[in-house]
Image (cartoon, rainbow, N blue to C red; front, side):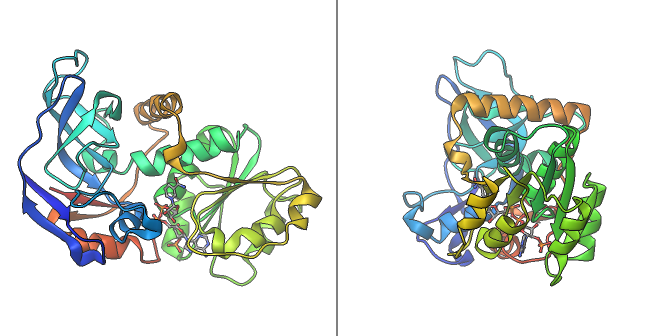
Length: 320
Ligand code: NAP
């Protein structure tokens, strides 16, 4: 089968399309034929070995894909060849024609959801769900500020929060991004490149501030978030790309919580709950992953450049 392999850490050019043997499923494993593969910022950090977190070389990147079951191991009785599925994590890497998964990593893909949308699910939607409901304990009637709402996690957070009955305010850096944020369910959209955009947030919340901030770029915004969050508010740090200086007195004075989160800390029980909720949201149509761009698998280097550029509009997906 064709797969992208990384044999040395580095820039996008280390992503090489090669021919490798097709994996075979063990007893509790599922082999999935990928029709689409999701590209996430974390794939670029691992490729560049940021914080020494790169996988053992050589490896095939990617954790998100959707397609059909190719084969199942002897212990798998509830899935069969040709079933439509999406995957949340793999054993062999998603940037390939086939990927091998544990049974627990494979979830049904409802008929109303295209494979490219299925590939846009796992990291973005599971992260948004975990941040909103397992970390911030968001409740209907509260207000959430999605600071960076036009990207993969942001759009997921907007849809999930709106469906749960929160008031949703999101930001994007372009007019097109803000229109998308509104279309996907935000009550209001602000421009995080405008100098006075947080005044707009204060106005929209009647001077109180949002109960929850989902932060996609904490190194740029954490101090500002402490300034605008409501009393007893919760700020969830989802994305961060450098150091930031904060005045912790703001957190003291507001009884505010800064909550770090990384999806890889979610427990198996939390992941099972998250994916059960996501599948149901897909079935009912409250969750509608937005695909911005589809590229051939061989163009993985271009996809890695694009996923780190500003001006987001839906997910980037590779097609094997
Ligand atoms: P993405 O699709 O690349 O989206 C990035 C988002 O950040 C866009 O909405 C972008 O808006 C926005 N942004 C750019 N400048 C900003 C600013 N100054 N203030 C606020 N937002 C700004 O990435 P993603 O997949 O949504 O992930 C978002 C971040 O979370 C990434 O850093 C990623 O690595 C991280 N992440 C963490 C976890 C975890 O487990 N903690 C899981 C998934 C992702 P415009 O393009 O419209 O300017």
